[in-house]
Image 1 (cartoon, helix red, strand yellow):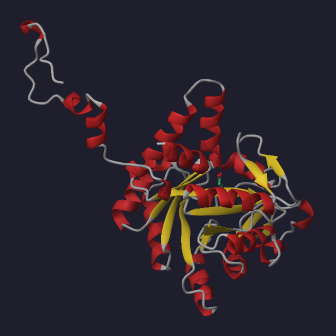
Image 2: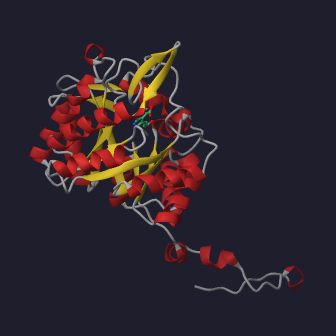
Length: 343
Ligand code: PBG
């Protein structure tokens, strides 16, 4: 019911616009709301580990475990029940399987391939995203092949692309729906597209980590994969400089020309400006990766009672939508989906 405001004449401002009117009640706020996060916007990244009935917590990511394949299958079922469209895999590889060349990436029986086959058999309609990069499998922790030069490591581009193509084919044969190159080598999208097409995988999509920055926010992820201590040097000769923005547009343009179906900006929250520019410039499906360090920051503050974790989580996701993202890879995916389901 509307009640006239009883404000003393002397205080009353003569305003043409009072923006607060549209915020005065719950129904009005709902009516003018511009963006919405739905379960359809979520891709859920899962960490894999050897074993059976095994869940190994990731220290800096409270609520996130490395999962044996049978446990991943249970989480896949949870994703299906919640209506999450797709999940993505990241393997924690046993040290004895790592070598300089990342050979395990081509093993058709590797963790990621086994998880793909097991989950596709039970839940054929759940989207499976696999990461293309050698870092889970290399003893030096880099995404590509390396050569030592005067004590420094050179990350070899064209040789790496050949390896990444083999890895991508291995994943497609295991049933991956979306191949997601996260390695930042030049020319890998075109090479992977050609190889997929040549084998008849015409419908396998490519989600390119097109603008991926050399970021400190990947810390907990490298810990989860066991590649942190192993990493020799850093990734700045292939991942982007956080200072750059125009360069991100050039990277995205190349990946789209080479045949990417969807592109990604990574990390997420510190790079919302990049998401907006990419979406405005190209209008292609654009995803954000809310990476491990972003998850860790929100969880750490929440567990200390410094912020309201659930509210911060939802606010971070609406920020991606507002910036123009079509969807978000987030470790919060099941929690968000459950919250949305409850209404
Ligand atoms: C590997 C890869 C990384 C992430 C996804 N794929 C780490 C890196 O580039 O070192 C990070 C994801 C996260 O932090 O959640 N190529």
